[in-house]
Image (cartoon, rainbow, N blue to C red; front, side, top):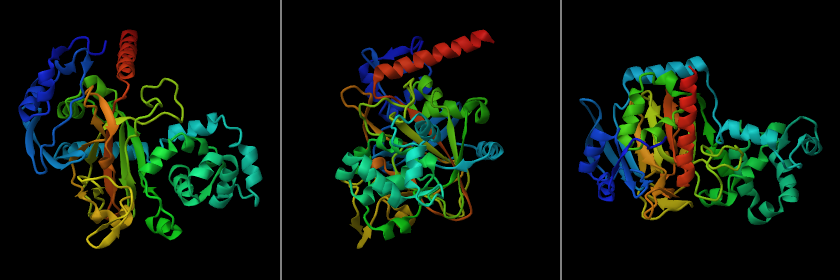
Length: 428
């Protein structure tokens, strides 16, 4: 059972995890010590202390790793040489052997399932044919917007045409060609389930078509997915992540899918968030019934650079350490900056991290709830993206650590998962 064999550290020790001394103790004893208050576990979070703070953490026996604070809002850390050159090369080779596909913004499994299981009778083949007046099996945005204004009265009243079109281009038009296929059309209900109002509250209300064209497609890259048994047979990378984050091993092991992404010249990913804001919807990783309404609940992102980029390809955090958060254009160095447009404003970001082979970048997508010590509100300052690759290619891997804000659901998820693993082992 999850946590059944671990010892308990008292609340005073939980606070110590956020100090240098507490971290040293934690990294020595992570297999047996789990931070708890009462009967509930507390999520550890590295204390950034201040920009420029450098720690030496023993993430492997006898091997120290440098952990440097580069931002405090959100806490962002650089860990050079977290991966060896051999590990980086192996991950790239495995990804190439498996084959990469064009990256999307929504998880493909979610949007494809939404298009098939779509319960809204409006978004079907018959409606698509009626809207497709020229019979070319494609709908332009004007045709789709006309249909939305007729069928989605609430959306039509709340949002401008430019806002709705921007969302369609990011979340529905997967190949960014400004046309929708029937499959893409049937994905529109998934757009409604992304909590459109919350999403828009973090986005620019872009109204000029010229600016949209200048930005280009929201994401341009290719990706594939690897599981731990493929890229980390001896679990050495996994164990380093456990020690770095201070999280219970079950949480890390349940977040074992690695996304590998390749960017060629012109490749980028405009500013975005890796997690969704708290709401009444279930988290995707703990919900047994998968629907397009599920939220993505990622407590931590760890990005690994798998190669050195000749030019460009930085990771940018446009509003890191701002005094206040803004989703609007703002003046910086006497020019107007769009924090969501990294094609034109990458170097205007508050923090720009240069790609370095083997380096890990860790940041927290959520605050810790001050009352419970568990997953709290999304950190709006975690807005980030990948800048254009100018020369060469860029290879990265993303490891996302999933935590449900519903503590009981997260515990049940681990209990069920461990029980299933035990059954599989017994059957061997």
